[in-house]
Length: 232
Image (cartoon, rainbow, N blue to C red; front, side, top):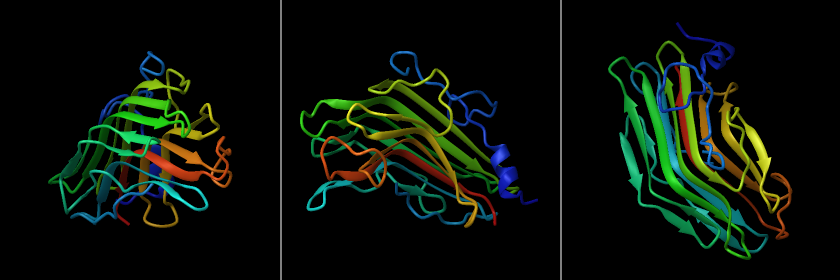
């Protein structure tokens, strides 16, 4: 049986741990709060998935400041996972160690995960952190019958005030005006019906959100990305 997009949406649950199947609120740890993805390949049963630890592109009108391609990408049917030791983009962005998995079960279901730690987004002038994330973990699972589930955890957040229960697409503004969205989820209802989940997305520039205090900076940073596509 193939579920409609509205039915698939109803099947999604935010949980406080990777692949926990009991629906509970996604939570942030108490200590301060506790993109681009690779193309998917259809697995047996018509299900596919992909994941990456994150990526970043930040530029001015005349200069590319940061260009970090998707890190530790995996694609169901091509690879079962990847790792990164971390990477920095100038003094603006730093990703710590992270890993992804893309697993296809004998039933045809696909599970993708992305985990990482020690993410930092820094002030362009001072180099001091505007946002730090201690650890993050996201996942999604799609089955041949059209069910799609997702999971989200985030710990050790500094620089943004998060509620104890982080709702889907929770948005706040960092100290320099950068727009930050946590626990993002988006459905491609007009295309393949896929669900994409990010731990954090940062938007810079007046055309993508509030202007920063450095005129002309624009771009986006993705912290963790997983996509699961049910059968058409």
